[in-house]
Image 1 (spheres, rainbow, N blue to C red):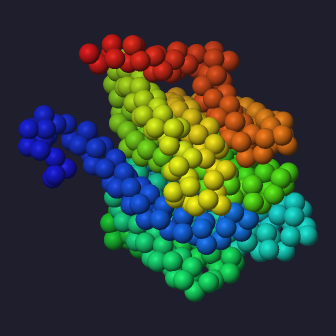
Image 2: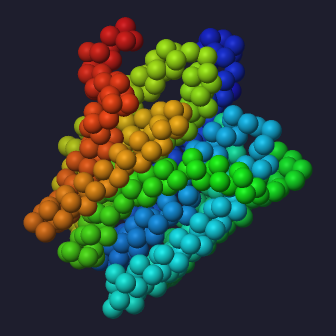
Image 3: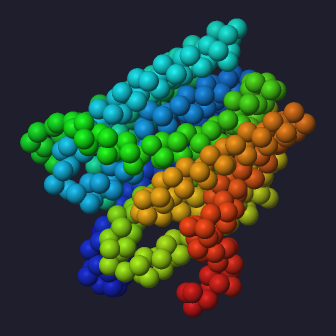
Length: 443
């Protein structure tokens, strides 16, 4: 906040929580801006080097592991943050229990990943090797408990330092792999090593900047309590990962790895914006919980403001990207990926519903309605699979993009209309989509 002009600081200096939120959002945005800048350059270089087919196979393996990565996390992230905010005196027990649970979850997830890929691609040795290597990233999830602590304290700058240091080191390693004409498997090993280094550095950062924990002791009672609250979020996370990643897996199985490469190039540009709602929602969540304790009316007012912000930020991104998609894809990835342009023009509109879904997800958690969240996520996942089965055979990657947008709309928007408890939130989202209503609230 030191770079903020003095006249602005004078208006907000008396609101320390607000300053803390803004500072936290700033660090998260810095994190993603750096990753976008360097990541896009290196990611595009990797895609150009590998070509659509090999890039598609790598993307298939990443998507395949990604579906099961949600299981490794056990849905604990927001539950741990919530419990630390509510009961800071029990932080040692909460953190140690969550770390043990995620270690066990990672081991189980890795076993499932290996079994699934051997069943799905029994004759594709390279795909099995890539998945086996990338699947080791699920084993380092226990270290993410450190990130949960820093998020609960609105101190994401420390995890940003760790993430960026690791990211920059391995961005350089990927460039070196390209310059040395490395085989595809070595890019998978680089991804696995990056996850391991990030886990080690998170633990080191916690020892340096985290609280001095007097005793780490996992509790069976605490584990039951955490899992009782988190299992709907686990199922929801699995459903979310299915409708985030299943399109690439189904494209690879039903069409070709090359089509996965075309589709993945488009989604790399489209999904790069998803850090925005995650950074904002993660930073305002502790404040929303505190506001709910004081005033239900103010709580819903702030939630409406969050929906307004999310919708129009997403639209501001989607409109220009729609018209610039084809020349942008060719400029970035080259003529080999020209077919990605129309995919991007369609897929970018999923951002509206992704932004809304991330924001409303905090309502489900604050209200302890994880079951409802799981139900809408499951509905979106089922819709995505059915739509992919229908659209991919005739339209390939374009069909997968259409299926994604429609299923996101079902899960993050229309599902709220189906449930009595969420109809108020549905109306709030409709209001956020109405420009006249939004302008009226702020004029």
